[in-house]
Length: 250
Image: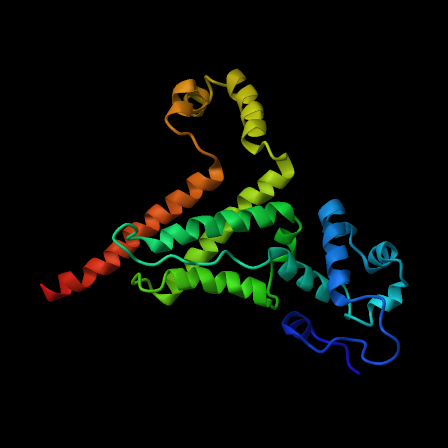
């Protein structure tokens, strides 16, 4: 029997092995253990040998379920990302921008998943098959933009932009720890304090950012600030699309 492909594993090929006694492992258990290992030690330290050791089985036993590490990582990524938030928004007088109401928590939820599994950034690069969960994220976000007047390409680009922002901040968070802004403030503050004359604009902006006045006016974290600015720009583009027919009639 040929080994299952990545697509077959992602989208539901028959369980293996089929013959003999009931297997002690399942593909789901293998993937879950691999995720735990990658979460704790990083993707570079994930190997079939290490995984087999954690599962208490021979390395060759894993190959009865999947061909190798490439296919394993594809399953790990789709499992770790999970399903997207449900979209229950609809246009109404109280919410004229349901796409914004959905895409903001959509991006925040993706960020939370990315922080929980920092190896996912490396696993999601390059040309590769996508699984049902990952495509569900794409479909739900593009679907939220239905009826806005944006082209299909603009909808896809919006999703890519939001994902890129969430992934970028998640990567920084994984490197700096949970207190990303605090850590950056300490490092940047020390440099700007000594180099204020050389970089006066950056020093002044940083001082204002760290002041009590700036905090009272709603200084927010980079994730939320970036999401809101992306969606603000999108709102302008959507309004432009809606006004175009009016200009044509004139």
